[in-house]
Length: 227
Image (cartoon, rainbow, N blue to C red; front, side, top):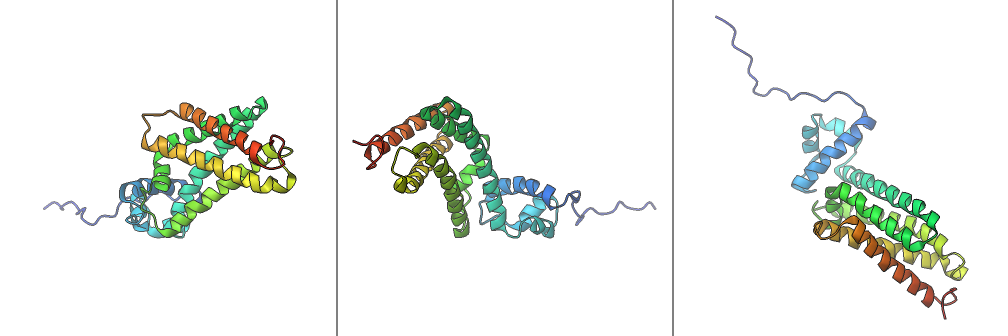
């Protein structure tokens, strides 16, 4: 009698090759993104991420100590990429010396970055991840980092045009306003992608920001353009 084939019931799934935490992290992030979008933040477990990645839970925990840290790293990746493109666009257009051109280029690059990976931004901005308070806090932290970076750039535009004792306060306000305008554009692009292109919407946002900047210089007491 020939031996019957071994049963496949309960067979272990193939294990992924050993890569080490640094090489494994980007792969885990990509897989986790898909699960967060499919199930939401609360219903996505670290075990589910491990199963989808073909590794054990300890391997995932070796890369990220918690689900909140994993999600935060996902947001970090997208924020850093967007800020890098935003800064590069501003630096490239700065040679023109025209602030309107700089603002339009910056907003357009931000919107293009979002449209490259729109689903990641939907989690953070549109609430599709059903995130917990700790993630809401992380999103606010990331936003504050963006405001600081933008305020630092705005400081160079304002220097010499407003009183020195108002420079930091006004630069912070400009940074916060520019990020707010950018977020409004991102939300519009994500909710109605067929109505706008990054180029057209970036131009609109640039004009809005330029109008607000000009008004600011006319109204801040002691500024070069105030009455």
